[in-house]
Length: 367
Ligand SMILES: NC(=O)C1=CN([C@@H]2O[C@H](COP(=O)(O)OP(=O)(O)OC[C@H]3O[C@@H](n4cnc5c(N)ncnc54)[C@H](O)[C@@H]3O)[C@@H](O)[C@H]2O)C=CC1
Ligand SMILES: CC(C)CC(=O)C(=O)O
Ligand SMILES: [Mg+2]
Image (cartoon, rainbow, N blue to C red; front, side):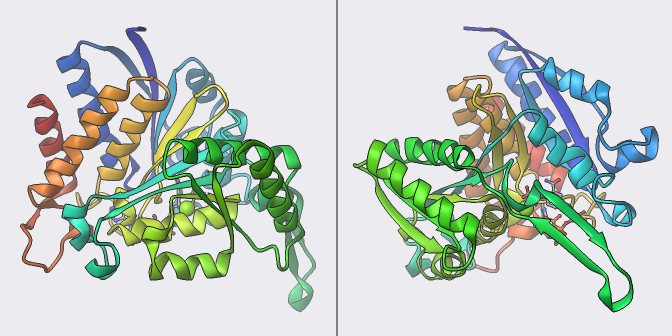
């Protein structure tokens, strides 16, 4: 087993630095307790890098990421940079560029709520009596976020803008293989999301996914849902889902919905992977400028993203499990950041970002 790992840390903007600090506490605890040699190198990115270096993602930062086993990413963007052009903004210039550069086509967002914590969900307990366990698989390097051409022109009322949604069959096949393989290890049920009653890309998506299922995965139950219906079914009966397979845009939207079904965007982690298990790990939510710098942000999505990093890029599944168990233990003990505080009669100790990081760290030391 390898015992020397390198992680590039990219805190970014808004709540990024404060939640990354909590994940760093966890990584240090893992280093100390399990004597694993992990080197972390920190780099500015996003709006902060625009302010200090003139660009959201420097060549040096890309090089350091290339020399690492994985990237732990906070979040980027904020109102200060919203006036910039698409390519100059932190979201495209840093995050989408990194996703493309490392070919991180598979975005996994595990939607998990154990049955002792169902009161965190805004959904009625009788609808999710056993909690939730859904894997959201989102295509991450294609579709309308990357399609060419895109642009803006004209003036006055004739001013217009356009984006291109494009999917190649190879892009659909590789993400569908990822989703079907995952379903093989779970409940063997894939729900593929599209808008094939209107969109050409969705028609190709549905045809390609269906063919792949018939040829390679006859034991998997495949269901197709239009995205509008899927948004509704997720509220009506989320337990009916096992693996959700989505194009880029629909996955972006539905995964925020799934996060809220579990209680908050602040607890949903994500892994963005390429075919070599190199990955960028980040919370599903954004830089939350409204709560940044106030010790209010929930660090759990960032900490669970670090757990995914140990599982998928460092291949240290037992460490990932220890982190995840410590997180759910803290929640079971009643510790809550404001976003997940409830009025139920369950234990409810409201704490800040730093305190949540400290409590989860102390639970790791007790393992
Ligand atoms: N991966 C990334 O870096 C992403 C960046 N963004 C950027 O973030 C900025 C804000 O975007 P929004 O649409 O407002 O989405 P957002 O996810 O940042 O915030 C939406 C709401 O969720 C709350 N929230 C988010 N994370 C939280 C956490 N960890 N704990 C507690 N509450 C949390 C926020 O306070 C806010 O009320 C924008 O500049 C956007 O482009 C948005 C999504 C992803
Ligand atoms: C910049 C956005 C595309 C990021 C986002 O919302 C996401 O990946 O969920
Ligand atoms: Mg999003």
